[in-house]
Image 1 (cartoon, rainbow, N blue to C red):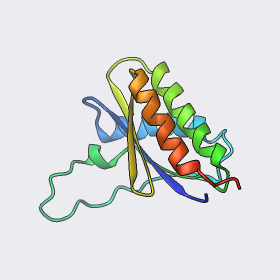
Image 2 (cartoon, rainbow, N blue to C red):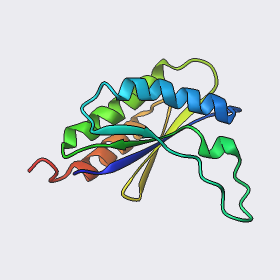
Image 3 (cartoon, rainbow, N blue to C red):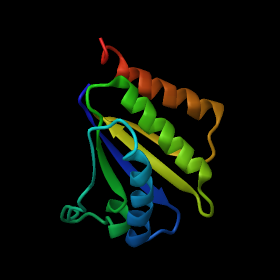
Length: 129
């Protein structure tokens, strides 16, 4: 597998400082998992003419998953658990792996769980063989 998973935290009405703090809380949980490395995503300057705010680029983590397919499942499960424990405003976590994007919200439905399972299976197929 040896892939890099981009994890982007968002929360309604949060500024860049708040998003970075939330990403830090999530990072402290993910660092306990069997992943190679977790680093903060550096906020890049938006392209000329773009209307991106600092809050749209803050709160990012890059997770190096290593060669185990189980590490992707562990990361996704930890993100879902972290979201469910959150209080206050609506939070979302956007996961991007090899161009495939999954956005998870706090209110998990059966449909959302099926999408999560599909995302993990698609990126785990053949990884541990």
